[in-house]
Image (cartoon, rainbow, N blue to C red; front, side, top):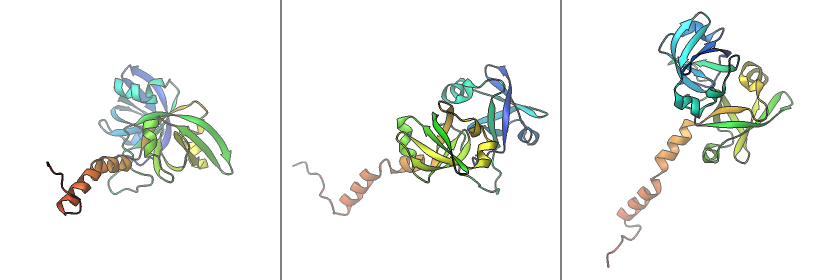
Length: 213
């Protein structure tokens, strides 16, 4: 599990094989071990090798197909975050590293001290977007400023803009989007709530039972 508070901006060093990438960083590689999880631009990957200031991770065909990792090149910047430690500070929100969809940057413009960025997402994921709710974009925990059509807008503070890949965002840039896991749980739990309520009302005599006559 992650928090969406990016620790550093790393860089793709090489593609060791079609299913393995090597990533370089100044902080994260020095404090991880083989078998641990690292969030790479919003994607949870398992470390397979650590060497100095770089580490390797295997990437499945499914991950390459459903995220932006399949479009990265040597030199591409990625956001890195180690898994949260039990008892540590929860600075962002609960991020699983399981990308829900690939979205796109509609626009990015400076607005006073911040940068306002609008993202588009596939229609089926728009129902999880709410004003002042949380969303992870390329692994960055962001607060939704407003819902804009099939997408949303966020205000990015200068620190986040300069220290993450969001600073490289421009119209048509593709991003990994993970909606709030709590919203998905609420949806799953409430899916059959109406039928259960009706059943309870029937048992209590508030609603007439169906008759075969």
